[in-house]
Amino acid sequence: MKKYEMILYDLEGKIKNKTVKENELLPSENELVKHYDASRATVRQALKILEERGLIQKQKGRGSVVIASSKLNFPISGLTSYKELQASLGFESSTHVVTFEKLIIDQELANQTLFKLGTEVWHILRTRQINGKAVVLDRDFIKYDIAPDMTREAVADSLYHYLENQLNIDISFAQKEITIDFINDEDKKRLDLNPLDRHVVSVKSHVFLNDATIFQYTDSRHQVDKFQFTEFARRQKR
Image 1 (cartoon, helix red, strand yellow):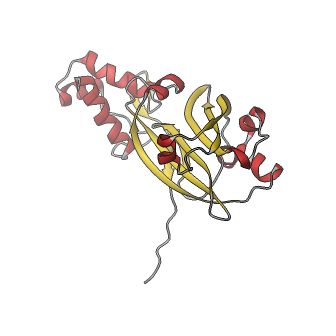
Image 2 (cartoon, one colour):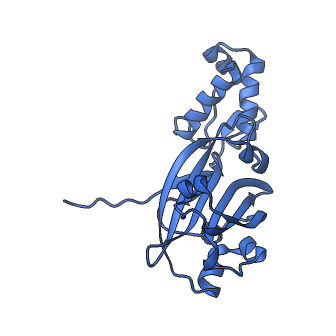
């Protein structure tokens, strides 16, 4: 790891764990040079990346101020569509449909999605843009016979709105798995990642109907510094 990366990750960690709080100043460049035994150019490179990531704001005559987090709270529990999440959190976003096609589940996809080998599905790939940058990559497999007349326009608007309000599909529950995955070639191609990003947060969901049959598999890949995943938990007395 290069020296500026070590400084970057250390300062980023202190900001995220609130060692240095919002609206507080980071140590001066001179202090950082001494603390990390680094050149001024190396320290400035680390600070430049922190600023690009929206974690600090350089102010003339003051130094580097930690700014309020711009991460969006993404609830872990519940079964909420992206459009419903957008409405509840009040952020502006747009959707671009990259792929909308019918395909047959092969053995590899059967193992991944839990659909039976040979099942016909819709394969949908969408990017979600916030402030003009693609920060989420959603890949969906929807059982074809559930919605054979589904259109690209419906997918671009709200998939769940179409299924529930136009087709009266009774979506019941989901099993979710959240992992930190290494960036793959598709992520590099479709997402507006930061230069030093090495990982994405992947939320994989198997979604079931009211009769407990699977109808959807989703892998939703999120830029790591845009979302924070939250959960509310209540203590149950025993």
